[in-house]
Image (cartoon, rainbow, N blue to C red):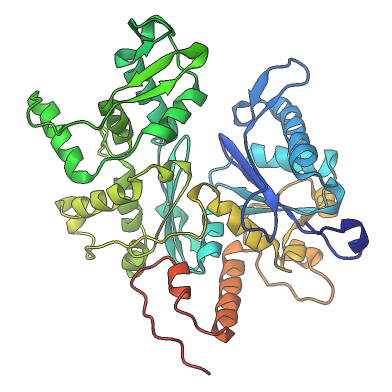
Length: 450
């Protein structure tokens, strides 16, 4: 956002980037390296004075009123900008309900009168931050874990996989263990069970405990713990990590046992009755893809989402994948035996937002977005994977520019990545560029001058 904004009225102002998550929403401006604010996806209702979560609204009318209040807080408390001057980019999941995106567009166009909106799939925006066009994106957030393969900037929708194992499942197991084994010490020396003081632990407290105390143990330690539980012997079980104390309200101290700290995250890798886990989703997704892309996808894994920030998550995931490859179910169908994982240039919880900030700083935003005038004429929001929007794209494009034939976000991504590689080739080569790519086995030979 420019310092002297009033003096640059003739220049189009930077776009606003929204990444609406189930629990947290990331907001900021295009061209910036991190969000201006990361806030909870909830708002205090002006009518009832109760805190309402945005994604828990099922009726369109209630959602409309909630989004009005929620966006008012974003625009006039965190961003402090005029809504009529800035375009909007919304990072959305490919499973986002159509009713939600229609209601959100209605609020932005009719109530806040934004110039244009662009819905961009978050799994494709992740590729913008890495400069690659083929990857397997693993999004482990609050409600579920989603896996979507992207080949040559085109999402393979038949290969997506999902499972309701993510942060919410960890909270439920953590709460159950705390109510069963947690001990609370107050002003007196005597300890009392946590269940005798409270019957329910607030989700904000569970989240704070998970972030500050819990971790994912390695594969060998997990195997020993499972073996000791099956045998019922405490001798084979490895020594637990040290217990920690967590302060509660009223000067009370909650003692968290070391076994709880390492057990709660095992829910992500424990297979259910259908033999599904976070690790099996990745292999099942690769099997659904064309055989020519399977090895490339295995060598281009990208983990995003807040749950992937747990200590030890990525190392455990790699070990689980290598162990699953030895099973006959996957060994007969997959020829590769190793995996490689990228490291995005940002925290995993706002990597998709960063991709939207990169997209918003490009000139294609002006004729790729859905304008307010076109929305008033049609009254609908096209899907980002639509391929039959030539007439609409011709209306949105400036007269001096010829738009592509198809309004496909995949082709746009491919064009932008090619342009980025051309720009990188003109720069002076430096060994530091190897670290920013996210892969550890790239060659350090400088590119040949053309």
